[in-house]
Image (cartoon, rainbow, N blue to C red; front, side):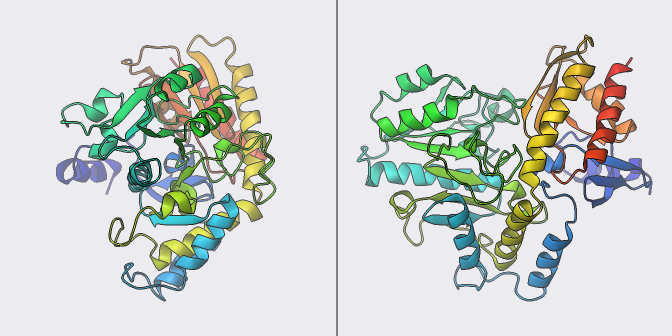
Length: 420
């Protein structure tokens, strides 16, 4: 079969809810993927940061296969011998009392929303059905009916109403707006991405996360950080909320001067190294134990495969010093592109942190320029994808060697500078 044949099958029998580049991938190893015709590409999307540890990492695959051959699923009707170990590893690594395992990122966000509301009624004593959750403009937390109810993107919410009530959108990276919204005593939580990935890698000011944490604490409001895309080493630390916290050498040192601790932490994507759907919500007992047996769950959440894989995936990040690599290579990536594109009228800005970066194309959002540039990049062996029409996101696996990064950079620079 030719690439067109595979694409035609999807078009004929699949829902049209995605608009992928016309590349049909068949195999992946490390930072590379190959299409059905054998062409090799650098994967500079990493399944939206799910493949931080690289494709087909041998330690993660070994754990996946071994556990699948031993015990795959029990449901939570019974205990299994892997879940407790995973919960202990995550709770100790990130510094929380409890872990609630789910599958997809959107499920984890939904879980956090339920926790926030239940905590508001049981602990903060908000009147029944009056809890309000604040969210940031241009947020992206998933595509469920609840989550799209507080999206500011018409493509996400348009035509899917009525919207669920109980949410208020405030500007991102605006502490004054947050302070004003927190004056409402019914506010239960503020849900926010430390860096807005889908919105185009919007990096807030350095004091924003610390300011968010302090304001929420002063009003007895939960600070909920969605680190599904930014967590697990992507930005050069275990978490983007770490900021300049010195946590790249192992377990987070949690320097109180620099570390910002969310009340509720939401993880997913790279929690499995991209080989299995795994997500989790972490919180202390005051929040987590408000939900009682039978009030929340998932058939597959916390299954033995997920639990085993997550333990190994986290250990790989630490053992292979992927956070240090992301921090160093990210700085090199941005510095190189800023220098090479300094006089290119196509490029408006380069921004990011660690290996979560974006090139803002100097064109209206409704232009095809960024899309066409991604087609040209694919032709030159680099896979990336536009977001919001005029922004190209670059998020390679964290296992890239320096030589591989330089090779990929030369392809990106050549493609953009020679684009006609």
